[in-house]
Image 1: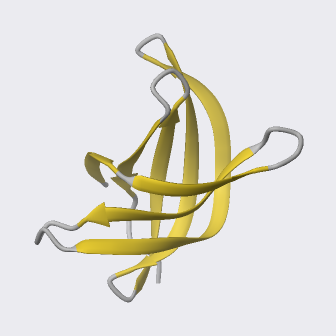
Image 2 (image 1 turned 60 degrees about the vertical axis):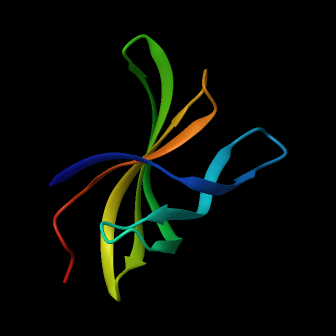
Length: 92
């Protein structure tokens, strides 16, 4: 598991009922290049308090560098900011 906490530019969808879902995001890679990641599936979603701030935690899958990866995105309700929080082990 790699901890990142890297800010991202997010395109998200909000349902008529107010449910927020990430759709795709843009992030700088380790080499400084911008990459776009499309969310293939949201595996888990929960509202968690993080340092006293309500934060939505999304565990998602998407293709990064030609490989399907599982990663965690977080959305801070107070700051309205998205971060790529961490990667999980690679899927086969």
